[in-house]
Image (cartoon, rainbow, N blue to C red; front, top):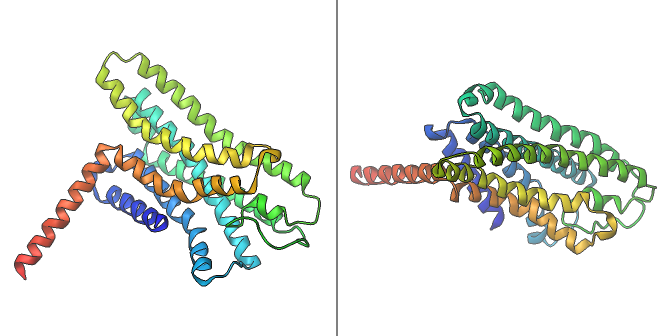
Length: 287
C-alpha cells in the first residue's frame, strides 16, 4: 500500500507541476525532480521485497545485490544534495526576491539537478565496486531487507576496518555538505524574516519553508542515525526500522507534505479534478 501510494502521489505531483502554468517556477521544477528520485528510490527496494514475500523466497543474486546497492547509493546521494540545494532556492526567494529570476534561472536549476545527480553517482561508482569486491566466506545471509552497505560488509571475511572508516568519512561529508547549506540558508532566512515588518509576510515566508524543513528533518534525521552514529550504538532491529523510515516511508510522505501544506499544489489538484469531472460530464452527455 505504501509503495503504490508513493508512486501515485509522486506521479500526481509531477503531472500537476508539468500541466499547471502556476507551478512553472524554479521551486516546483526542483520538486518535480525530487518526486522523480523518490519514485526511482522506492522502486529499487520495495518491488524485490514484494516478490520475495509473495513467492516465499528470500534470495538475491550477487549481480542483483550489486545493482541494488549501486542504485540505492546513487539515488540517496542525489536526494541528499538536491534537498540541500533546494534550501538555497528558498533563501534566494525570501532574501533576494528581486534577483530571484536571475539567481534561479533555468540554467541554474539544471545545474542544481546535474550537480545532485553527479554527487549521487560519484558515491555509487566509488563505494559499490569496493564493497562488492570483498570475499564473502561467512554466512551469506544478510540481516536486512535490502543490500545496504553496513549489513553486506558484516558478511566479509577480510579486514574491512579501513574501508569502513573511509566510507564513514565519505557518508559524513555527503550528509554534512548539503546539511550545512540547509543550516546556512535557513539562518539567513530567519534573520530576514525577523526584520520583516509585515506579519503577513512572515507567515508567507514560514509557510513557504515549512514543507522543506519537515522533509529535510525526516530524511536527514534517519540517515544521520544510520551513517553517523558509531557502530557500538547500532542494533540490527533498530537499523531496519530507521532504514524503513527513510527508504520507504519518506518517498511516500514527501509529496503528501508538500501538497497538504501548499495552497498552490492543492489549488492545482482541485483544478485538475474539476477539469477531469467536466470532461466526464461532457463525454456522458455526448454518449
